[in-house]
Length: 142
Image (cartoon, rainbow, N blue to C red; front, side, top):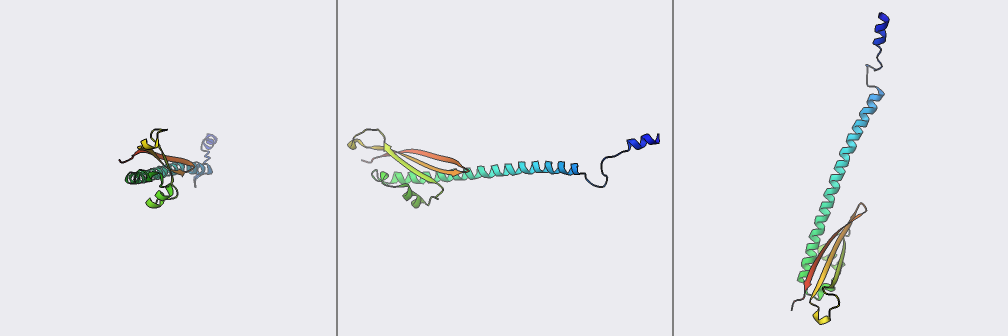
């Protein structure tokens, strides 16, 4: 019976410290949690940056469109995106595009009373281009 007790009492674990398997499993579990938390923090930061840039684009577009409302009908076609960039201190990371077209295509010069102003502000973040497009009518004052 003594031999049976010796066989049952065989222990493969070290009683002094952790085994290599215990350490590997613990490091894997910690690594998974650190990666998940890091990913959540990164995604949260990127969402904050995108929201901030979109808010800035909205603010710049409102400023540009208010300026377009203030200037005369004839001046609308003469102001360039570079002039707006300098006037409102818009950073170089934003692309500005202004398209002006007749409200009714093919109308005569004397009937030119309205134009459509299409303002496109865009930026690129992580290889993705984000556009903010606003259209507004510019009406000739008589």
